[in-house]
Every structure is written in C-alpha cells, then in structure tokens.
Image (cartoon, rainbow, N blue to C red; front, side):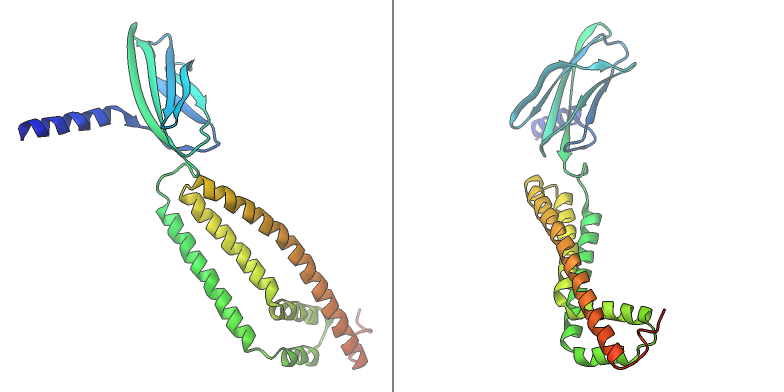
Length: 242
C-alpha cells in the first residue's frame, strides 16, 4: 500500500514538473518564453503527437528572458523541450500548451449565451410565421391606403408591409443570424475542421443576403409605384405633395 502511494506521488510530481502554459490561438503568433538571466544560449524543440515541429532552434535573448515567436497551425497540444546553460551549467526544462481556435479552453458561458440567443431567434421566427398565417394582407393594404396622410408615412408602412408579406425576406435574414450563431458555437468548441466549412457556408450565405436585399428593394419600389397609382386615381393629393 505504501509503495503504491509512493509511486502515485512520484507520478503527480513528474506531471507537475512539466507545467502548462497559457493557451495559444491557431494562426496567431504565440510567444514562447523562458526566464534565465545567466544563460548564454537556450535552444528549444517543439513537438506534437504528429511529430517534431521545431528541432533545437535558438531562442532570442530579451534581457532576463529568452523568447521565440511561434505560430501554431493546428488544434493540438504542443510540448516544448529546452536546453540552456543556466549559471554556466547545462540545464533543461519542459512545458506544454494547447492551441485552440479561440485561444481558450473554457467557453461554456459564451456557448450557453449563443444557445439562448439561437432559441430566441427560432422563437421569433415561429411567432412571425404564426402572425403571417393569420394576417389578411388585402385588408392590411386597404388600411394603408385609407390611412394615407403623407408619402413619408405611407412609405414606412409600405416598407413594413412588403417585408412582412414576403416571408422569404425575413426568413432569410433570420436564417443568416442563425448561421452566424452556429458558426460562433463551433468556434467556441474549437472544432477547426468543422469551423472551416461553417466559414465557407456563412460567406456564401452573406453574399446571398446582398441579392436578397436588392430583390427586397425592387419589390418595395414596385409596391410603392402601385400605391401611388391607387392614391392618384383616388385623387388623394399625392401629386400635389412637395
């Protein structure tokens, strides 16, 4: 029993001797540093489970601390082994750090916030969809005509009417928000491969949004022309407004 406890203490001590440094962010320069005021040189090697990334490269003396600028490209654990001449005697050190998409391991609060926001957007979509089904658009259009006082007010009402009547507009826009939220969730989960696909999809979707806005404006202009014709036929003074 005592031998088992002793072995466990040795393992814990060995694990603690190889310390963990602050997480790095993929694609962002990460400063590997090691303090040693008495060293005349320090060389390091960087390894991952896939093999050696850097082998016996010299660090730069920055006063009392030696530094090396390293940029991780994959989401992995990076082990750093170093060798220097501390106080004139060869001495080694070792530590490791993780590289993630966000540069952080724990993003639980942000992920929860994203999920809550996602549920809110889906709830808004369901409410608008339900309201759309129960709306008599002929009656609403008639109300806009009957309540006409000036073109500014009618244009605002006409824009809201056009947006609400054509479900494709607001469904696409809310879908765009959902894509961005899901993209951020994947980013926080540090799934690099999946995040690349989401990035491509979000970019294509965003380009599509430009076309949707153009189509929306064209639809609104067409609606306002029809509205002006109706108001002019009814002699409601549209042509006399400044």
